[in-house]
Length: 381
Ligand SMILES: NC(=O)c1ccc[n+]([C@@H]2O[C@H](COP(=O)([O-])OP(=O)(O)OC[C@H]3O[C@@H](n4cnc5c(N)ncnc54)[C@H](O)[C@@H]3O)[C@@H](O)[C@H]2O)c1
Image: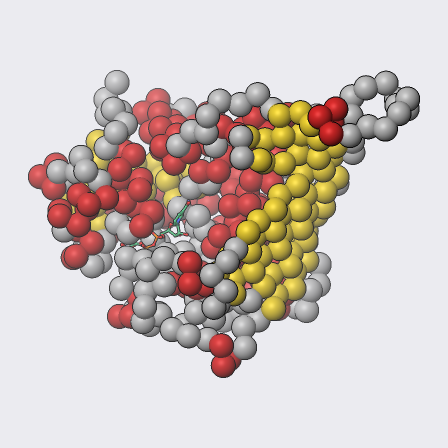
């Protein structure tokens, strides 16, 4: 089979991780890299993250238009901050390229919808970087939950603002934070729920199907507590209503000066709980005679799922995408650009709900209703 000729836009934190995987996948051939900042294209820098990288094997561009004009690509990766898209996805789809777009695909629903239309009309194979779906423990949990009546999921994620890494985008020259920690900044990240929580939201969708509505309240950061543009809220309390009837709560905090974090996850079906423990997913349920003759508890209700050691899910999402691009068969992808829109609408809908004082936002209405038009637009809203 002919190798898939790959171009990549955005050679920063995530792009470098994908490049490292792609250099270890036999069917992939990285032929072109694009980044507006020359230092991000330097061979020595890329090699620090991608030991197999050879500059001589790639064309390097600081201009996306020039890269597209030269052609010679089958697939394009987009690994850029979600607020800086400027038509690259649409242009690439129209040029017949298959697409791997990092989450969140945009901070603006109109822009995401326009990308989706271009991808659909081109018939491109397109996926979004929801690598959590490729974690083999998460896949085993999906199999276990299939057919069960899911009632409630709770995910708590306490983190710190300082734990966000210094990124590779020169945000200080592009109207963003001086310290390049753009994930802490609302205008660049779209909030912690949009930038990071979207992984948990998409994972819940992997287990439970699509989301119908969202209600959210954020605790916004006090003006006098904003340092270096790190203005994302202190905390987020978001409730999602799923089409299957399940209700889920995502609670996140990003405090400063704490240097401490933890998390909790519980998926409840009508007669049990599923969690992830150190050695793998564990279900808690009773499967003896009912009603029981005596007290029930301990090992009688603890059921570890049989799982292999955890895999490298970033490697596996790349493998799947390259295989799909090579064969022209996107049916094996765990999520397509189109199917991922529900995850994007859910987190962007959380922002809208917060701005509306916690009102319920029905996602189908958010995507098309006139009263949400301003919230969907790139400017204003
Ligand atoms: N799936 C995951 O687990 C995961 C992990 C990290 C980041 N991400 C996502 O990947 C995307 C990129 O994040 P990152 O952490 O790599 O950020 P980053 O700032 O480290 O890297 C982004 C790269 O894009 C380049 N860039 C910036 N503006 C550009 C433009 N207009 N055109 C072309 N290139 C441009 C920057 O120079 C930089 O090299 C984000 O959407 C982020 O949410 C996903």
